[in-house]
Amino acid sequence: MAAILERRRLASGALVTSLVFSGAIFGFFYAWVCSTMWGLDAADPRVAIIAMQEMNGSVRNAVFAPAFFGTPFVLGLTAVLALHAGACATALWVGAGALIYFFGGLILTMLVNVPMNEALGALDIRLDSDLAEAKQIWTDYSDPWKVWNIARTVFSGLALVCVGIGMTQRT
Image 1 (cartoon, rainbow, N blue to C red):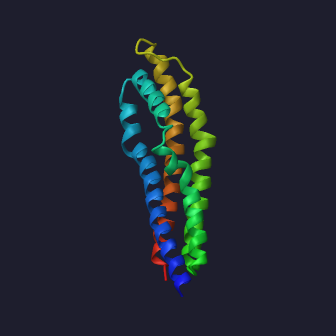
Image 2: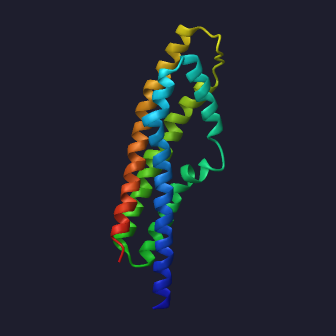
Image 3: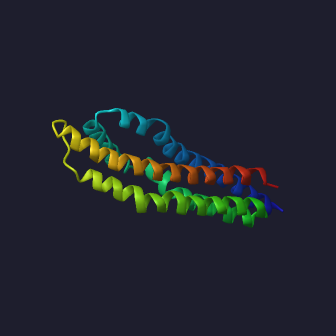
């Protein structure tokens, strides 16, 4: 009986951790949808390009990495712990969230958004660059980048919902 209670306690802690990780990465992507890209689109395109280059460079840090890279593994571990604790429905929902985020968040970002960011980062745009050229570069980058960012936001939001549903299924 003590072993079962310990497994449930461990699974509960992991479930809360999964909620935090899923919420953090969803919030990160969501902020780009509802404010960051709108602000950059409203700015001088030369400023927008330079700002995006700087943000893309600064996001590679120890604060962002755990939520971005760790979320599918935290969710996967939580699913395993829930399964061992006898919470099969929770394990199913959280496991589904892990897969949704892994493919729709992490892999999508690595295959689409990161290459776009790297291509933009390779450009030498300055405040005295040609405005018309910068506007075309920014439009060609921003419009598809936003579409793919919305996709990864939706997928990470679905992963968060799965964790939330998994929390309601606990026994």
